[in-house]
Amino acid sequence: MLSFKNNRFSEIPIKGLLDPSIRWILLEKDVLWIATRDDGIVRIQNGKSRAFGFDAQIPIYHLMHVGNDIWFSSNRG
Image (cartoon, rainbow, N blue to C red; front, side):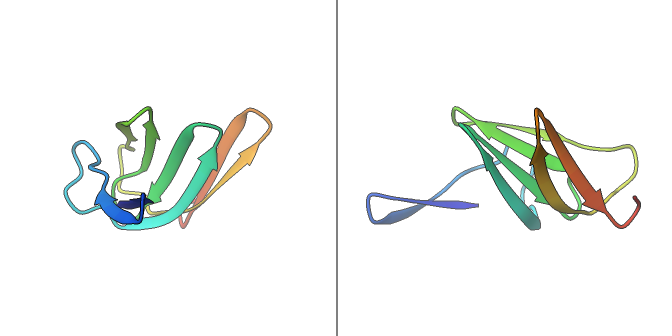
């Protein structure tokens, strides 16, 4: 994952994920939500990341903000 700031790209490390396959990105106020193929959903806020995984490997395809909730879709419902 890279960010572009001051005419430069810089890497944003995601704690615990070496090579996440990013499917979707959702910006909500000061939070960046990332859907991945193999590693669940990642939240980046204030420069810190947290991964939300699942018991089974579920590829996440889309993220959507509805009211105060974040909804996601996968090939398993």
